[in-house]
Image 1 (cartoon, rainbow, N blue to C red):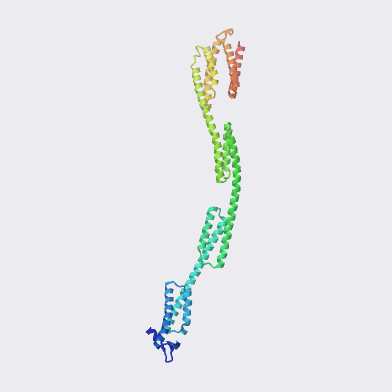
Image 2: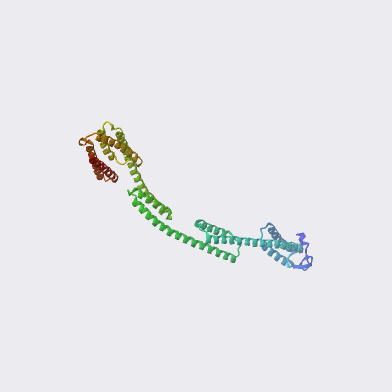
Amino acid sequence: MSDWASYGRVDADGTVWVKTSAGERTVGSWQAGTPEEGLAHFVRRYEDLLTEVVLLETRLGSGAADAAHTLTTAKRLRGGLDEAHVVGDLDGLGQRLDLLISVAQEKAAEAKAARDTARAEAVARKTSLVEEAEKLAAESTSWKATGDRFKEILDEWKTIRGVDKKADGELWKRFSVARDSFTRRRGGHFATLDSQRKQAQSAKDELVAEAEALSESTDWKATTDRLRELMDLWKAAPRASKEAEQKLWERFRAAQDVFFNRRKQIFSERDAEQKQALTRRQELLTKAESLDIESDPKGAQAAMREILGQWHDTGRVPRESMASLDRRLRAVEERVREAMDAAWRRTEPSANPLLTQMRDQVAEAQARLERAQAAGDAKRIKEAEQALNTKKKFLELAESSN
């Protein structure tokens, strides 16, 4: 205090003076005690002022204070220094305040520049978000991903500060328009998609109904071809809703499985029957090919008549084996016929047993035709008719020769 007290004095009438480079000036009056007590009072006021200045310097230096606020306070203190009612080094305090004002002005300018830069960056960030939103609203068809992106843009938008109210309002308006536009376009898309799915469901309902109707068909080839066509139509049709699509597909597939499983069973049974028929015909063919035709043509003829009757009763054989078996059997028949012709030529016409045999063959062929007609087997009927006509012609030729 004694140092600051050297900058002031109290005269005989109690007036308190402070010393500055510009000279002395009064700062007050002291009547309540000794001059030293008066100086001490005004020195404490100076120290309070000095403490305030030091605090401003410290906070500004540490970055804890707002530079603009510090500048305002420092200017206020500096402006009132020439009339301050204190005793102390006012010239030195003035210099410190001048320096503080200068530093505060620089920092305030830097802060303003930083705010301007931050504001520009904030505007640029929001502008970029708006432009992205507008592009998505106009072009994107990735509905879920774009909807999620709009939410992310909004969340990011809320974190951006520092944009002035007018600019922020204009940018927000653009963003809202873009978001609403996308929402309407997405709604229209799904409305259209829903309509298409309903149409697809209706079309697939018809495919399922036809497939289910065909599942009990026994027209194997035509039904197989039609089911394949229905499958192609199914694949080409748009998808119904996920739940409806799954249920329709299960019904469609089940109808196909019913038909194809039935067909498989029938074909398996038919194959088994044809294999049995093949085995039986091979046995009959072996028996026919082992006949002693040369030494006993009449016995061979009788045996062949019996074999032929059994041959046609065996049923259908696999197509790939039929021609070979028939060819071998006809070869045996031809050998028997030739042997009987030779025997007939060696016999008197009146005692010729060949005519009797041929008449018996015609009768047997007629009986076989009648059996085929009774069974309703078109193929066997055709074969029997051809065999009967052939044997009748041979008989006529033989009778005319006699």
